[in-house]
Length: 286
Length: 295
Image (tube, rainbow over all chains, first blue to last red; front, side, top):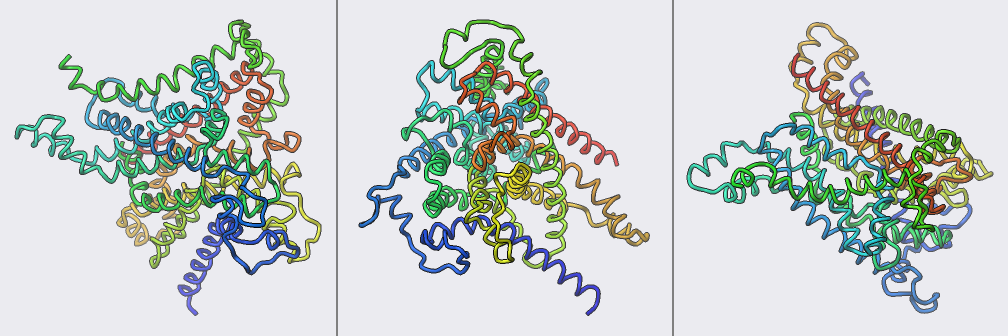
């Protein structure tokens, strides 16, 4: 074997180790969701999966199957409903507002532009738990604690800065000349935006949207303090409550975890390509 | 009016209004609260101004400084390791020609996990009774279960492992994007001139990568506080405050002990910490970018 072959083998070996390290923790959780409790608790450990079943998911979605303890103690459907309502609504508003803002930054020069940009980004650095304290005080005064509207409002503010960062980068990739030509041909500014710049930056806006959705879907620190009951608790808070209460039912908890991961999994794969270009473009050529 | 409609402000107005209402005003309230002895159980205390008393108490509070120090140390170690691992992974994937795209996609796997989920899965892995780690070690004759999440040092190491697992890919992916964009000519030229691969890496690859390093650092510094979710899930800051970070301490002081005034004072310190992190890396980014364009 020559040196090059040894090198190749080493590279592939490290790549395989890497993939194992990355994939195992998540897959182990997914696998546990389908395994019977006995196997999970067995000692010595049962490594080869056997008797895979859907009991945990059935219990969660339709209440207990016959012979079990009856209805599921976890209101998964409420959590799921809240997560969906809050994430979709806040994403929609954040993308709407953020895209308009991103366009403003990309197409206009004004005094202290970079400082405003940085200031808007800085609102994102505030730790969720620090921001939750004053918002908690305000919301309990005006009755927005434990409501969808309150949480949506906070999530919109959370997602706007990043949407601006991404869309600003995408709008700047579109040559200004294109809309200028359209405008000399008689388009208004709004028409030029609507017919030229918006369609061209569609993929950027879509990835900003998916990103905002994921942030909302995954958020915990803020919701956990602004939600009090099943009226507004989301899946992440549900998982936390569940873990604190039922420390033994690992397959059940893993099933709930699978509920959280599936939408995130699909969306991230959809957005992955645009995300990297968006982030690095906004950063390097800015 | 016409000038206003054509200018940037009409476009930025919705953003500014929302951020003022949901971020700026609450921050002013929390600044005020940090100068009062406000307790959730006694609403009247919100209007009693006590000056810097909360901050003075914090200065003498050992628990606070331990949590503060642990947070800074935790971030320093975690971010540096993430950078080193991320760079290593990026260089590795860059070497692979067949299946590079697939590998890059697999790399994104941890990015889609919410921090609470990351905490959950590592709590499961490090569970002393049925966790993957101890089950695995038992196969090799380690019969006595290791108390991963109970022992002070091990618990911090476990949390660090979770944090690194979840965030290394951010570095790997952004640095890989940087590597793929490096022009080939200077590298070829250097090799012709007799540079070895370390010299090429140090003098060409690394300077070119620096802006990407700082982009990754800036993006990461925006969400370092996510570690709160992970810690809250894995240990809740315990046992006996052994894994307490600034953020779990704030949450406990504010919501469990209901001492909102004190929690807001701590909060302000944590906000300055985060902003300082972000500022530092953002200016490094601008600097590296300028250096690159001069050369």
